[in-house]
Image 1 (cartoon, rainbow, N blue to C red):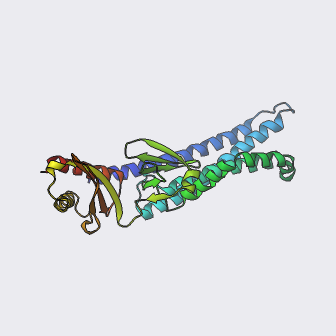
Image 2 (cartoon, rainbow, N blue to C red):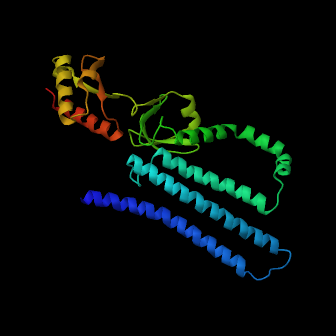
Image 3 (cartoon, one colour):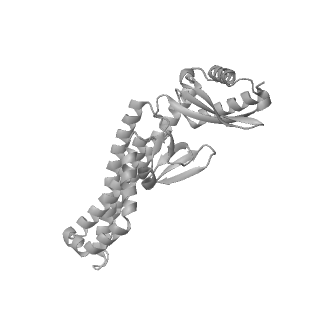
Length: 295
């Protein structure tokens, strides 16, 4: 009951923070509107600039409030439908946040052009060569941006998935940005993998595999070894008792990786019905304890 209360409280706090931002933005708009109405007549030279600047500020804030209100409604429905807690991240929420930020920037540009009566076509013609040069210079960043944006609304790689990019360390996706994927490795390090690397390298998503594969390496002294088959049977049965409804015995196996005169190194390939970094750490610890106690 207490756990349920805490979950509901966290959800309400998260929603309250989002509503608070919209409310504060609305107050700022009203304050700017009042300033615009009550402003005494400034010098003729600066009057248009002051008025237009305030108009731009008000219109951008209004656009931002509308965008955030829509985002709040859409994200809330999405989270309720999928049963996601408001304090948990997911691709769709990250994507919607990025979309609102991008929409606000675009709205700012459009409003500035409109309020200050800037001819958009003439402006584009005047900076055409400069724009082409910028596109060539930042083409890799643009590709990263577009690929990152597509990943935010994709189910191929989701926040919380356990993945490996190329030959890099395996880890869990912490978040997605326009430029990179943030991955927490098994050793606790945080990798910032550029989207271009994710786009051009093979990515194995262990969380999407059915059954999910997990490999653990360990060594046993030759003096302790009796039979590989017996070791495999005892170890898998031990893990199944420790992690019921998780280990698939029929699809799991133990292989000899390296054998020398002092010890034998094994590679345990587990088929798991679940997959997470925490689960792998727990299974690895259970294997190491089993090896220490094995006779």
